[in-house]
Length: 543
Image (cartoon, rainbow, N blue to C red; front, side, top):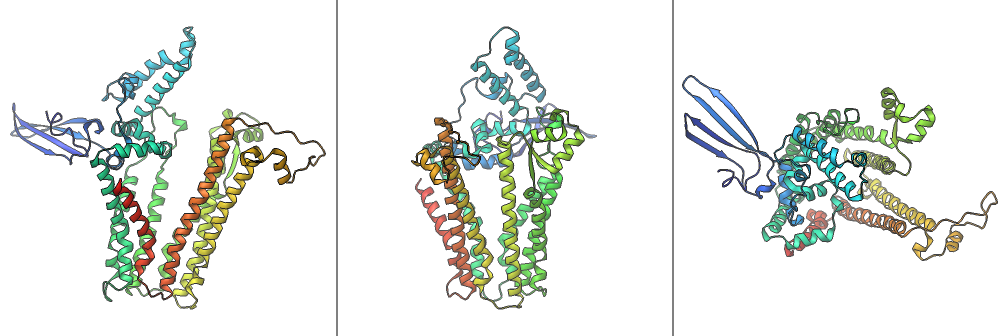
């Protein structure tokens, strides 16, 4: 009766404890969280019974635990208005596809999958003399997708909480149609839209509180005796929350292997070494923040060079982390087979382990894995360049702070000016290369004729060996659209990178002008961010 009435709209992690002595109830306690979402979003209920016996009585304690991951609860609270109606036609949800109940065990799900596979697999259909149609293939693929979700406890809990549409958004945030999201938001209830606005206001307050109080401290609003350790109180709160997050990730233990992934193919996506390494890097940053605050309060008599020691170590860990990725060698399976003289399937486990340590193996140079590895390598190189600029900037900053030189502060920030220009130029170069590649494949994409493109690129009528160049085949409409999309994506990336760098440049220039002796309030340093946040709030408030 509790489930039908009081707990239908309750989520979170709570306990309903029903104690009975003899045939009748003597007491009951109800501790549950606040109502937020409909019951259909509540995760599966897990019931357990504990028996405790004493000299005077035997008490049966029944605990009904409603469990929902808080990340899903927050996701629902934030994004429910963007989903629209999530009503699934009868028989089309994952449980109905497999033919199991929503509280089915993993063993029941596995048995149902095997039974369905025997009747739906294209090979089994062929053995019975039936030709598998595209519809049969689609039904089997859909059934396999349902099993892959429900056989994974983490994915299953996510599916139970937010449905298939929510899972798709979590896994591929940019795959959803922006127009559909905007329409769902516009047609959602006032309460759901108010939630979004309240969350944005709360997040803005939490984010802007720290820079706002720092600016007030710089302006002397708290008096000359105000302590930086006290002013940075919001930062310590953030650090405590992030530390608890790291501790929870470490205490979580190894991630269990899903049933549908073979043991030899399973790799823990978040190994313990990586978790501890991330915690150490975070502790180094916190230690630097504490030492810097003590130095500003003149409680610490160290030099600024000694105060920055945790930051040196942090930068060193960054270089150690990115250097192997920046030097990563990408090889294809074909290259390995040619080098070792045998098929990849015949490689021993020791050979695969040794190859995995030295190379990044991809199926081919045209595969998505090759493109992903190239992006990872390029991003690591960019991070190393940024780290190099940061190191040079810190060195210039330290010799200025410790009084070895008295240079102009605009000169001290020279590495930042160079880094900004360099990355804008790198993105422009990438856009130019994307345009040139597209023009070579299809000159008509830019309003040119093929012979015009050849003359622009310096190609004559003869190749270097004296032969006549081969005519490039015409692209299909789909290939032309894909090529156009690549150029547009490169152009949008150029605009976003340059705009973000320009925005950051304005803030840094205001900061340098202030420490150089500018006679204006420090609030002006964060004024560009406040202006953008205000515009966003106006748009959301009107919506």
